[in-house]
Length: 356
Image (cartoon, rainbow, N blue to C red):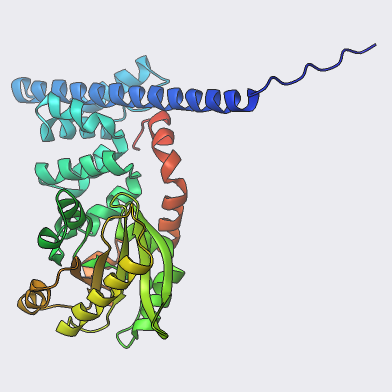
């Protein structure tokens, strides 16, 4: 007579789910620990090479010999190619202070650090992008995309009235989330495009649009319908920001900013606050996206409004510098990045560390 299977204890599934999450969390912590030690090791090796080159006159041939000897001694480690040793030296030269390496740079992968060295000359800009990578969990390709589109110059550059219309720290956070200009080069639209064409294109490429808007934006709808006293009104794009905990109304304009745009946006924000905003939500924010703007005209248009509005510009592919266009990722590449962003960091820091 066969034994009857034991009944599954109550709450077993919850216990199993919790156990799986704890194991995965431990795996991630272990991987990050390995990455930290690897980056610190590479920095120390780079410092040693740099010191001997300066004090003892070591040349490039010594690095080639060192790479060969290390590869023979540690055949299972793939990070000792001559090229990678030169990256280590450049890494140590770029960051002479170990505390900076320990506090920030050891939290991102070696491949991220190589990208920072290759793409940026300014130590301040390198640290800014390194900190943003840690904060947002950017993959290496997303990091490169943000560098090549000049995110550090665009973020927080929109003209707004947030300081006057939003409480702190909400006003500071909202200001830092807006860019100017926004980069819509993935749309490849011509000069004669109409506003509805731009809107449809952004919705069709919603992943790219949300990536450009930044972390925290959730898409609610396009041509979002509001009925007010029997009249129909339609918001171009309506989003919700998870960190700001507020609705974000986006109005698209194919022309340079005009003063009447701010009055229309003020109306939309008031309507969303009354009809959609929950009691736990923060005040709704408006973003007017135009092909261009004159600073003084925009400042006058916002001066006496009591609703939080930002005015930014955007660039389509045809209006980007020719030298920049060829270096930007394709739509397919961006979609792959968004699909793999959550798991890529762990994969990168556990694969062979060879750059050749």
